[in-house]
Image (cartoon, rainbow, N blue to C red):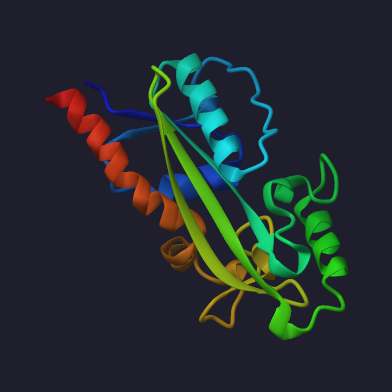
Length: 203
């Protein structure tokens, strides 16, 4: 049986990051560009889990291929967990990364350094073509910087300083970020789930 895994994303940054993190698996990694068009999934869940499950299930059942969907975002303690599931559209429906970052910095202007704590969260859902789904969750704690720094990564990476570091996500190498990131942690938990799925179909 051909081992295929469909990543339910059109985000080129997320696609590259997921492909790098799954490079050691003997699996053909596909994205939504590699399959027949699938209706856009509306991410209207109130949690990362709800959105990830909805995306994975809709993609797997439409394409007939084991699918992996990720929903991730930034939770800032001083903002009661915002932007959360609205991270990608914090400053508006079609906001750019720069606009989202600018809004976050504006809201955090008066927050003292010791209260600028935050975490990146990633929930990964893996769903087979029959609709059976499993989820795993990864987190990376840190703080919000006062000015953007670094040219790597995407989203809020230039503002997020992971715990134990003095650099932002965007200042770290891709290898270092993948090693500690929320998505890296979640994918490490997802690999045994994927291996078990493929092993069951070979036995």
